[in-house]
Length: 288
Image (tube, rainbow, N blue to C red; front, side, top):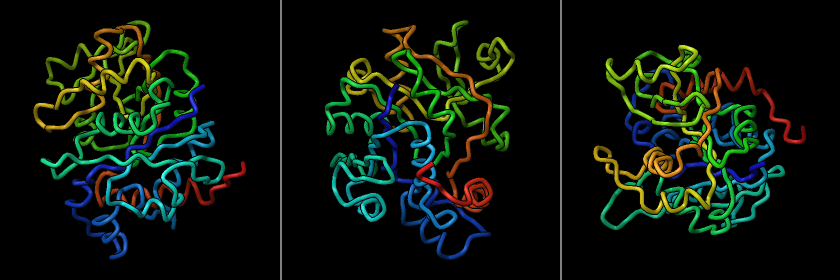
């Protein structure tokens, strides 16, 4: 079982900061404009609390939070030490995603994981999960991913189970698998002509919501050699993953799931997420 989890929380949150909202109070607007999405208070708790809670329920023990060099607010909530903080039975450590001198924003998700593995070299020879800080993945999804025996894996969500607008879902990356559910390809914004080849044997279209399991000894070199995305000018996890499966074509299992994944991308999502958490997570029993 994999008990390590890397949570990506060092991004610039550009869409959150630039988005508009007509239904938020001034406190939430200020938090959305100044904080990492992981630390926006929802039902009086940081968003990250709910991800950590589900992770603990799934059996995760060691969490590595990727943060920006100037974001010290995480230490207020999750411990002042660089590593080894105790939080409700979890061990919390921070990986600082340094920004190159010639850039104003981080270098991307693959770079975030690479910097984590270089700051915590033990992960280069261990398995670990990776997820976003702004998606609330279920404990069942995290547990399923942590228990899988293949070196690498991802949760492969049925697109029709996601409760988003069709316009928003169209931005998600479609996956293509073989008859054994091994990953063959990931494509962003496929054309109508490309769509048919990404339809699964069960007639569904499935998408990645950026929750993965990786084998550090296999994946590390592909993180190091990951090229910049030609449009976004960032090093992205799907790029590194696709480069890896070219060399290891039967290494990455896609686990089919059909459930909604609440998301915190823009200010409009804050009230929706707050309502969801208030009804589904009125209390967090960390001892359960």
